Amino acid sequence: MLMRLVEAADDLRLTPALLTFHPHPREFFARGSASARLTTLRQKLDVLRQFGVATTYIARFNSELASLSAQAFIAEVLVRRLHARWVLVGDDFRFGQGRSGDLALLRAHARTFSVEAMRTIAVDGERASSSAVRDALGRGDLTRAGELLGRPYAISGRVGHGDKLGRSLGFPTANIALAANPPLSGIFAVRIHGLDGPAGPEGKARTGVASLGVRPTVKQNAKPLLEVFVFDFDKTIYGRRVSVEFLRKLRDEEKYEDLTALTAQIRVDVAQARDYFAATR
Image (tube, rainbow, N blue to C red; front, side, top):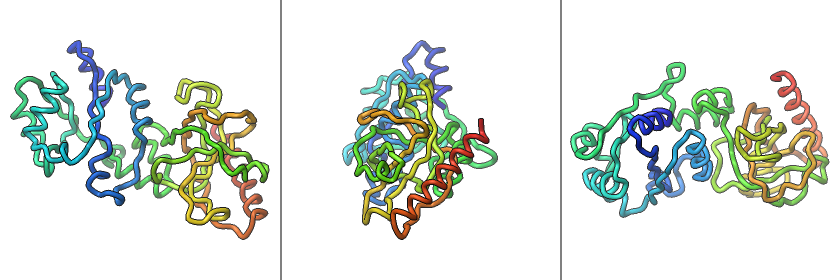
């Protein structure tokens, strides 16, 4: 869809732009029970830039925006504020108060812009959707999640200070706080971007093993945290922005009797992750 947007903008000599909502409408209406986000707003903006989207408009989704009728959304947002000339939407696109607007209504009220609908994309017979990606991640099927996304699932963030427990166990980790609960948990073989350059696919990547969860052996009622042990790396990276790609799930998160048992399992995790990367070179 983004490729089609950039292509059409080039043909029409327009700026490729995208409109997104923050927070997601489901988060606004569900308030605490919405599905886990697949990306943060910062990650979304990074991906859009990589695809060539020049401008991203972020509309704060609040009660005022939610109360706009479909016709008012067209007149106020698309025409008056964005001055849209060409609009690309999914064929199941719904908008306006109560999701009353659809593709037919959008086309019927398009006086100053044209509308193109993007057909539903299926991967091996399954609709490529955020729900399908979340389901795959929840099952630990990272291969399927990557097929649906068109890229490995990743979490980005800044490396912060932790309690230094990993270092005392012999496995120092880069700790990345999470703004929201993630759609997966467990122990993973991962690839890390941003340690030696930009946190993107153009920078050098390193490999490692990551724990994503609440660390039940050492904490009670803790918030989810991403901890990454980077192979063959020993530099100070606090404050560095990194992107962690999840490639293979090794196991679920578990609670161990003591730190000795936890350390023994970490050694096994590290060995399994190294074997995975050695086999996939």
